[in-house]
Image 1 (tube, helix red, strand yellow):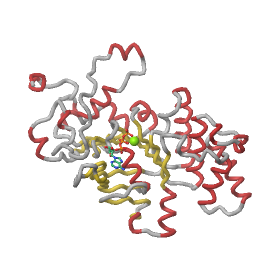
Image 2 (image 1 turned 30 degrees about the horizontal axis):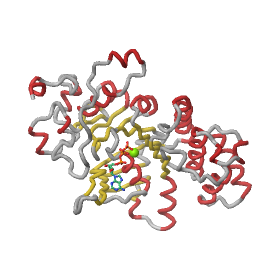
Image 3 (image 1 turned 30 degrees about the vertical axis):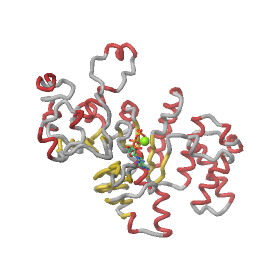
Image 4 (image 1 turned 90 degrees about the vertical axis):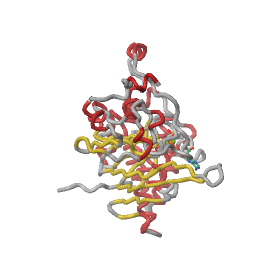
Amino acid sequence: MTREPVLKVENLQTRFKSVQRGKFVHAVDDVSIELYPGEIVGLVGESGCGKSTLGRTIVGLEKATAGRVLLDGVDLSTLSGAALRSSRRALQYVFQDPYSALNDRQTVGEAIDEALLIDGVRSQSDRNRRTRELLDQVGLAEVVKDRHTRELSGGQRQRVAIARSLAVNPRVLICDEPVSALDLSIRAQVMNLFLGLQKDLGVACLFIAHDLALVRQAASRVYVMYLGKIVEHGPSQELYDHPSHPYSQMLLASAPEVDPVAERQRKAPVMVGEVPSPTSPPSGCRFRTRCPLAIDECKQQVPPAYKLSPGHSSACVFAKDLHRGKRSALIAPPEANAA
Ligand SMILES: Nc1ncnc2c1ncn2[C@@H]1O[C@H](COP(=O)(O)OP(=O)(O)OP(=O)(O)O)[C@@H](O)[C@H]1O
Ligand SMILES: [Mg+2]
């Protein structure tokens, strides 16, 4: 039996009008990704690479300028009315900031009740039962039901926000850095909650993060995004063991070591320069302006995604060499050093 993806994103493009007249911000450009039922997939990249725009476009908070989003094989752009609303509910977005996601004036019970009403649960006793169930699922005691959301800690608020998302029985959660605003001490707890939900409810989760260590622990597969494009994707372990795009290699090497001693002794170069403006992205390979391996060819054409091993591909002309360890972006070639 072949598994079908629950979410399929095909050649998605999201452009915004730029403040510079007649120009566009190329925030997401020709991105294709897939999510299978019950899978946690990481989406990583530096700030400004288009991760949130991709997530927001998938759930319909931004309008795609090209490409398609398919839920269970159905192109959302072909739906309207009740069918579209129902598909939209199946795609839920969990925001980074648990403070902005909830209405301060509501109690926890009211916040969840509202989501259940939107989902069409008519009977008050059914909604009460579901609220108890949801609070339990996100690890909150029933007593918080009568408290105002403003009285809760960050971690508790994020749990309530997750309970609200789950109230509508989603198929896919887009989790946009859902723990990065939380204290270090409670991040792990909320992360474990996500892992449990995926196991128990079979919800697929696209997990957006800067923190590669976090994604590595949680995700079975990872997409690496740079300046609007997916540059590499693959099974987590394979990608971490054999990063095969210069950007992924440098991103991994510049992630801080967990151990402070190792962090002090680290010799790996940190990422040089900044992400260029998405208003006028470099021609050809978008990473070439920061890549120690770039050659003339990289200017001329957008590199295709080279398949390296099952489910692992990288869009770099040197992908195969990088994968085999014959080349590395961390050891610059002599000509690059001389420049
Ligand atoms: N509504 C908008 N109008 C114009 N430009 C936008 C808009 N939203 C995002 N952008 C631009 O699109 C690019 C991608 O932004 P996005 O927020 O998707 O990046 P990100 O990868 O989520 O970054 P971060 O890690 O900082 O959250 C940025 O250059 C941003 O300034
Ligand atoms: Mg973002």
